[in-house]
Each structure stands twice: as C-alpha cells, then as structure tokens.
Length: 401
Image (cartoon, rainbow, N blue to C red; front, side, top):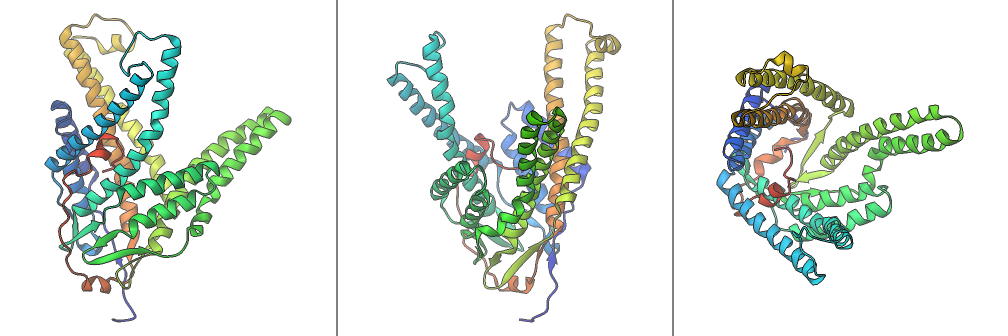
C-alpha cells in the first residue's frame, strides 16, 4: 500500500425544499392515520438522509422498513406494559392504585413519590433503547454494497451507563469525559463495517480539554452569585453571561468529543478518520436556524390561522383584536386540525433549518484519511433484529432521524 494518499471526504446533497416537502407530507399522513404512518414516515426520512450522504461519492443505503418499526414498537409496548404492571403490583402492596382518583392527601403523596422515583427505573430502559436503536440502524445501513453491523450488548451497555452516570453525578459533572469515552468505546468496539471491526484507542482524559468552556460558564455563574449578594446586583448580569457561555460550552463539548473519538478510532488494520467541524460554525447554524424557524413558522402559521378564520366566517381583524366567538362543532374540528398542522409545520422547519444544516457540516467536514484500506474489506453476514428500534421510538430517544 502506498504511503501517500488523498483523504476521502463526504458530501451531503439534501435540499431544503425537498426535505421540507418530504417531512411535511409524511407528518401529515401520520396525523391523518392517527399515528400509524409514523413508522413508514421515519423510514422514508432515513432513506432520504442516508441517500443524500455520500462519502467519496458513494451514497449510504438504508434498508429498514416501516413494518419492522411497527413490530418493534409493538414489542416495546409489551415491555412498557409489563413495567407498568410491576408498578401497579407494588402500589397494590401498599394499598394504592396507579389509576385511582379518590385518594387521601397522604396516599396521593405516596403515589406521587413512587411515580417520580419510577424515573430511576425507566432510565435503564432508555440506555437499552439507545443501544438497540443504534444497532438496528447500523444493521440496516449499507455503503458501497457492504453492510454495517453491531454486536449484541444492550444489557451490559445499560449496566455500564448507569454506573458511569452515577459517578458523573456525584462528581457534579467533572467526570463526564470518562462517561462519554467509555460508553463511546463500548459501542465503537462492537461495531463492524463488512468484515472489518472498529476500535477506539487512547484514554478518556483526551476529552478533558473539551470541558473548558462548560466549566468556565459554571465558574462565571458561581462567581456572579457570590458577588451579587456581596457587592452589587449589577453582577447578576454575569449569571446570564455564564448561562449563555455554558450553553455554548455544551455545544463545544459535543463537537470536540466527536472529533476526538473519531480521530482515535480505527477500522480494520489501518483505516483512520479525521474531522474538522468548528464549534463557532455549528453555533451560528443553530442560532440562524432558530431565527429562521421562528420567522418562517410565524408567517406560515399566521397565514394558516387567517385561512381557518375565513373558512369559519370569522373576520381575521376581529380575531386579532381578541373578540370572542361561538365556534360550531365543525369549527372546533378545523381549529384542532389547524393546531396539528402548525405543530407539524414547526417540526418540519426544525429539521430543515437545524437538523439538516448541522448534518451537512458533520458529513462534509469528516474524512477517511487512508481510503485504500477500504478495498480490502469484504461482506458480512446479514443481521436479523425483528424488534427494530421500537423501544427507542416508544421512549422518544431514537435520535434526529
């Protein structure tokens, strides 16, 4: 193999208009089918995004189906039903019911305490759902005709995630790099492309520099809180500055973690990767995306509300003035549908103005540094996983796509 090579860069070809129309169409079909179409909707969106992502000019291919996701969701419902059943049995033991309404204040307090504590029982399911969702998406992804894949290990991942989360919590977030690194390594070391395996090298302390802006934001807020009470309320401005700095620091940490993890990962014997997305560019995309979403969403929503008012025979000017009207049953239906369409509209705009531009940056600023090694990789056996990523769908942790 030659010692000199040209890196293989990525390209994202998705268009804002095409993606917007796709998301709007699939979202409206989901509303009209009372949610049933959502499994096919997400499948169509993934196929669009995968096919628009082309490392080295070769697009990804998504082979998942809506039926797989539906079956996976039904499996998740069974799991959650068992969980709720266990909660009910425990409440019965204390003489309470999960759905009873005629409870005393003491009984209500016990039930609420139990409900809030149940979050700690659901958290492990979320980690399992994330691992299984990643495994499913990889198993249904092909590139250059070769399949990706991921080894089973959701339960072990959950155990590790809970343990690392506990350590991160008791150290007030200072050991978050440790959690990020080891959970990423656990997943990376079980991921395959064809018959070649991914591996992570190095140590978790590589991620500490990525924490600097987050820590600085927290420090500014802490100092401002102290000075606000001792010197002058003017220092309260520092709390706002620190909070904004913390938010930027969180974005910086995610970007730098992605770069560091990718640069310390290998595929097979000698395939390595590089990435150069900048925090400033992504922050600007987020800000501009939020502004565009708000402006365009407000204009389109206003037009839709005015159209609905005209359909019902209501003067838009009077509606804007806040006058009260008696709405007939058909008017209630039109109003409800308008609200749903507005919700769908904002969801589509977020994907177009936020999710897709950030995806473009990540794809086009990531590279395979020595693509010659990819030619030595061969096909792997197909991976069956009938439950798809239904648990992630039910718990809403399936990711942007």
